[in-house]
Amino acid sequence: MFIFGHIGITLGIFYFLSRLFPGKNIPVDIKWIAFGALLPDLIDKPLGRIILAEAVGSGRIFAHTLIFAILLGLAAYYNFYQKGWKVPLVIAGASFCHLLEDQMWNSPRAFFWPLLGWEFPRDTFSGSFIEYFMRILNNSYNPAYSSVFISEIIGLDHSPVCRQLYQVKS
Image 1: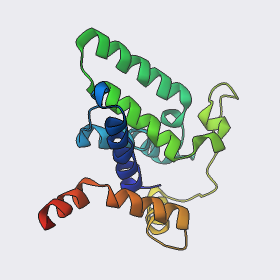
Image 2: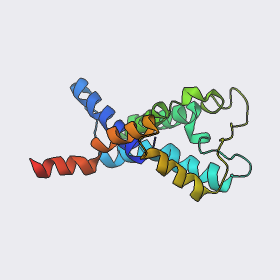
Image 3: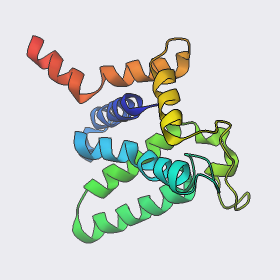
């Protein structure tokens, strides 16, 4: 999944939950949901693909683990009950949605790190970060890669850009 898929689908999940549980006052704040939905990639892609490229060579490392999601959730929970601020809960929830959207359970050595060992699995793609980025960009918007393409289209439909366009037309 790429940018629109993560942001749009996570935004849709939050919107759905806010409608399903109106009494819980689930905030649907686009900027924080977008930040949380991209947070694992914002951490892991530069770290694993640029800084630790020779040692790790993967864009799914620390922030794509269950332990990261749990620690982020605990910090958010603590912050909410100390200060009453819901933003960390939104970020933690959106970040967890990212892991679900990436289907991290299909990479148990990364998802359950460090329980299954200290090393992360390497990506099968080797090359520079720019080559990697261009490949992902091409796969995300190429209908031949249907699962990624469909999630991007669904995410684009739920993105803030499209929401603004819908409001202008109405």
